[in-house]
Image (cartoon, rainbow, N blue to C red):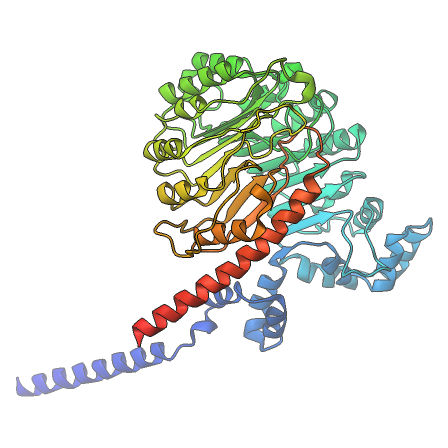
Length: 561
């Protein structure tokens, strides 16, 4: 018995020693020897650091190269892996013998070297107007040159076999994008300005099932929907797992809407305003196909407030589960019609988290006697307690007071993005007192301290005053952007404006001047002067924020000591 006990004790000690040794060995493992951890660390490195890491050692090389080549904002680095700069220059100025030169100069080994890096690419942006390192000898890469290169590749050779996200902008033929596509592509954003034939050729080629796993498609083009309707609706029907579809305004013609409605997983159907194709009455949304959009969360469409209200009433089961609504007014509106629509949304769609009303009508669609919107437009949405984003565009400014801001805060405690007519059409006759006082920012800082983006039109004649206190009781904690649109600096007092804004912010916000893609009014000759004034005010803002930060740091340091 005693012997057995001693043997058991000895065995236990050996086992404990082994476990202790294993634990020590595990503790000594270098975390950066784990590829996943190393990749995470290197994701924060600069390109030059990644290049150095790729040369450090064999175990780091592949991981560093994967991170370095994962996201490319130009096609030129890839082309350099295939050919020298002198041959790349020939592509910039293609000649009849360019293809022959490629055939004689590019070997299978060149393509293999290219593939070693191309296989690492997951995201690529291409614009045929891009220059390369500001090199005057290689200023841009025409689409016909890129197409020639693509067609020269070895048979069955995928240019980017693992590409997942692709952005492509061209004013020429869009077919040069085709060799870059693969079944792995999940995100595709294309800007096509080469004309109807080019766009149609592109969509007919896509309809052959090249990207069956696409999840997001964004189309930017000035081409009218009527001219490409057949090819577009066919290709949309092939993307069975598509979740996000963004098209230009006036694109939801019945056949295109029907194709989108057939997608069982579609969550976002919205509009991209990069280009505005001509107005098309057939795109005013009046009805949906039966049982359409079972998973839709965000909807953007063309219509006037009256037709939009009727649509929401007729398809209440769809609208009562939407999170975001974007309305692009297709023809004239008035204050009463807008209020009727938003009241309907407030009463029947209280679940909404974002409402965007683009009422910036083209001059040809404005009714005689149009007037500014009233605060009632805001009140109609007060029941939407979870509202986080509200953006309204209109030819006239929307003016509010401190009491309005307080009521808005009580109704929308989660609101972080607000834009209210900051880019009105200044060519229209407006009342002299139209526009907000800069002092309204103090009310917003008090009631919306978590605001991230704020857009307002400020009245020129309301002169601001800065008390000299950079540390008021209420401040914006996270304001990143103050959008002033086409406002001039109130009173022209650049110093006071810069310091007043700084006093209300814990972090320095960016002042955004100018119009957005929504704007369709007339250009104003005073805009350049307004921009210059705001740039000068921004310099005072920057100086005041540096002063404010230094003082706070000094106070905190003295308290800690």
